[in-house]
Image (cartoon, rainbow over all chains, first blue to last red; front, side, top):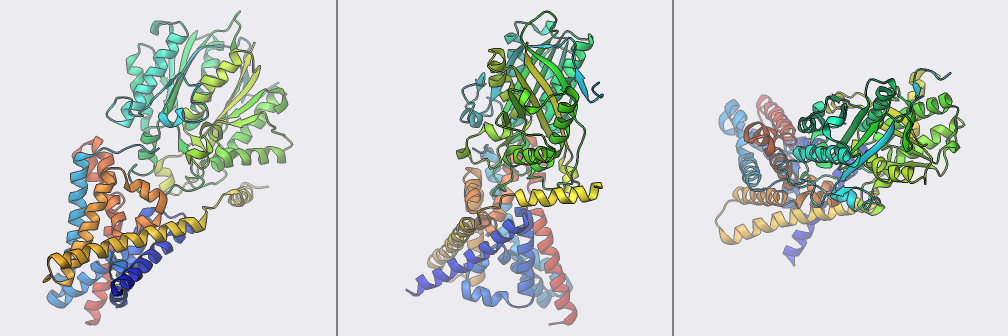
Length: 122
Length: 334
Length: 150
């Protein structure tokens, strides 16, 4: 039962973040690229003011999976980098924290671009 | 005396052959049975969508020449235009023919622009037979103007669907001949009412359509009721309503005899929101069902007005508004 | 009437004519699909925990996002993700899967223009701005921490 509730919270929080973005798309006609940029910056900001970790504790993947989680990882990498290595750490931190996601995305795209062709829409 | 915007042809050129090629979605649309050739796969056996568009164009030109009972050598000039950068589809398809070629660009108004130009050249006496070809392809246009095809985003409710289709018409000197003739033409002015939204082409083009229509009716001393059909290019559902409103404010009443190709091409179930767009949209309808009905005498007089949105990706990214244009040709069976 | 006023009047008129997206159903679909993707993410993490119980929390979350990202680029390749997107809107744009889709879709789309200037160069047309802006804001936040020495 406990797992069910925690999954329900994850579902609700993740869904709610997407719902906010959908309202923005409808009201402002933003393209998907702009939405992603906006949410990444929001995520970094939330991490910066130390709010994101509470959200993550509360909702787990519901906070991490939306792109705000990516922004938060970037910011967390920057902050941790400073703590460990000072200014050089600030330069290295953000990308190291998100390296796995970006690398998998790039390699996945490479692999599937080799295999598949783009299809027309119906 | 009509002003310079409208040309009334003393020796009106005649359309002697047409051919249309349409894609799979168009096949399932309202006019699917009327097109001369429909494709089941919009790659048309080619590797890329651009190559497919080019091949569709070649096919339309070659088969239209056949339909007119002519050979390559009989054609004095080929007019071609499309949506791709540097109008490559037209010029590349012209490689296949030993016909002098002139590329024109009028965005989605290309067919009317070509017909009007060809009519001027023929009635002026410099050319006897001219082929007018144009077309567009959904997938090649989508990747040039918008996003990658596989990107998961929603289409806004004002957007239109670029037609996959090419068409070619052969025009000839019409002296002492009976058939479908181009009796007058109006070249449109570029009109810009400041619409910026690239997903709302209908609103950007409607003022241009109104401007040209008003000029044509005034210069030819006709009213909308004098035509069996007034056919606009790809204004779409919303653009069509705007044009009717604009005309009504000016005392021009568009009735049941007014139709828009973009609004008609697809069925409501095909999820195209405002309808179809693209060079091919009005071209494939005009050169199939409308031409047939003119030829059989079902229609006597049709006003064909194709509209174009003269934007590029760069201008819209720089925040420029979208200028529109509309060219008109009057087709009569006489 | 001068051109500016005419233009303004026309744009106002166009706005009044413009149909709105049907708000409620799309909001619901965005919520539903977005939520489901997050749940799948958590599920992946839980499975990883079962297989490697000693793994640190950070590695679990890395596995989660790597799994989702790979899954999304596969779905993009087989032509499914754009259909999900047409249905779910922001529900499939905002999760990390949407980020992956925005990298995989131009890669697949532009490979016809070659693997260097097509596939590789265009890979980041949509996702590039995300990484650039995310990195820049992370850097600014880092600088603030650096200066105030927290």
